[in-house]
Length: 225
Image (cartoon, rainbow, N blue to C red; front, side, top):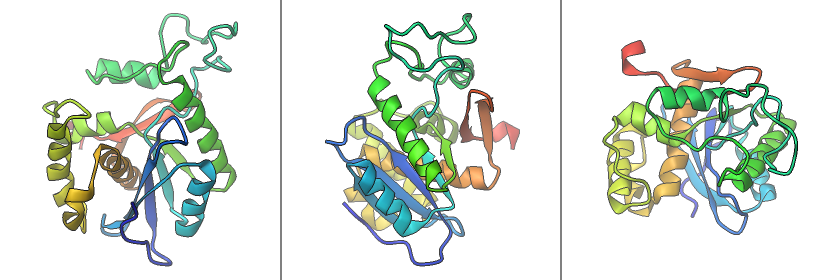
């Protein structure tokens, strides 16, 4: 699915909802920085397809909704490897600890994680995109949903969740209204990631984690604005 196309010279932010396998489509949303309007909704399977999308659009910022770093001190998530976190008193990364303290659930980046394959792919893509000269930030669509819409978001992968997200995203993103029936949960998460990337560009996000281990950008809480 491809909807719209960014025009030349427009400053854009690109959001990615990444799948663990290139056998499945990963969703991409591209928003205009000037007015938060939809430029393009598309998808890719391979990293090479993603690189072409990025080169075609030359975004100012890329936001990926997947862990992009490992816990400090660890070289991998292989349970057979002797590497360990620098902080033995906690599981996962500092940003994930901070999410838990906020009451926001997440998968911890740790050995034995059920999303290990996804994390490895995300790290490889981050390195590829940064090697191409594009700035990449880590975002988390579930955290963005909770902070922006409250904790009453229906469970993911349900029709109620999709309907809820479409109803909330449509008034936020100019030009999305005509495509509401074409959206699925992955394209909605890509839109949320791009929207959070726009907030990051406007300095309207909080930074969880650390520069040393990795920063996760989440929308500022209403009380902190």
